[in-house]
Length: 538
Image 1 (tube, rainbow, N blue to C red):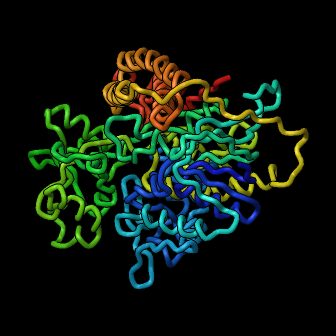
Image 2: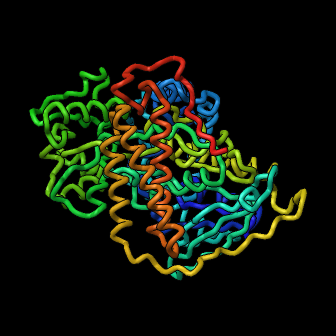
Image 3: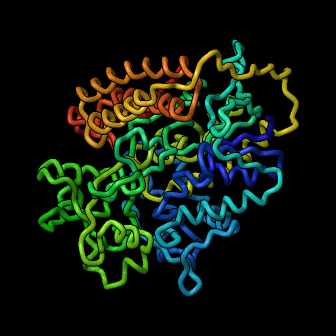
């Protein structure tokens, strides 16, 4: 199949780009599962934006939002990128409301929330299912947009580039090999403009708030294609994932209790009812996520307790039911009435702040290949993401990426040379894997070793142990990949081990503690280490 634009991913970044791009040519959007299986659809909190006077929190300014972002980023944000993305917040809200997103309003004005690290109320939300509302509006808009085709259950295996086909000097993207998960067929999708909008890699960890689809596919594909990757050591752990060992199923294990609950007065306490977070930061439960997650980790290890608690019992009766109906109803299903008893919570892997290196226009080091949203490292997040900046970034960079692409890679613009012929995918004489138990064991081992050795608190010894085991796992996974007919399980495992390796390699290189990377061997930030951890394949 051929398209002017090939978009891989159906979150806010991918669909925002696709809807706009369809005005300029044909667009194919690939979803590895269902169209709503994205981090966007799972996002509870909201989207951060400074609105025009009369619509924003009294006294809020773009300068304050920039300052909050830079403070959370612990010295590694690209200030120019921060100013660009934050400065386009109001335009992003206009885009989303134009697509039909219904943010909460009161008396005609937006209801604005506050989250950790923010000095002002600037979080727009749709109750506690903001991401689902954004995804709904974008999917509906995309499905009625001419020239735009969404293909669900189509898994991108690898990018096709001229370098992979033998070019010595020129390296540009030509498309992707894609697995149709329903038929098992692998087809070539031809496009000179490919956009990675695949989200993050939370499933590389045992406990995560991410959907099952978050296996780092975009980072792994870009890395194999030769794109630069940076700052993968900075994995944000959300402080408040619901904890209930009796609950079963991925939804129960991944259920997030939004940071907005703390923004509205929720307080983290231990089993004795003590607010332990203020020992780490005077902002207490509203400190940036890296500080709060480490405080929880420290308290759990100090006391031996399996969890801590988020207490909202001091709020008026009916508050949670009215302001956070999804959280309230879900907790009731598991026997927790959060208006009468504290919510048991633990940290869980939530967001990657590094990724495929791009500029603020989404451009990577491979010609024609763009990366937008969580898969990309634009410089906005630095060493720690400020809450609710991610949905903002996804929309802003999607718009800028299209403008950049039309300027330099406009559809219909003749190539300097004839595009090379792309060979069809060759399965070879191989059968479906008959040892799925080995694949599942390797999947589980990767996630457990990453949780044990490369999570909230790290040491060089733990990182070396993780690296040694990952090298062996990489060999085993390579044998599966080349020795069997590909399926989604093998592809996800292949991408997980690749991304796990990138996280560990970046973590080993950073000999300091900064933002989300905290190591007991180097507990202080070091000025000479205040730089991106850049990995180049070639």
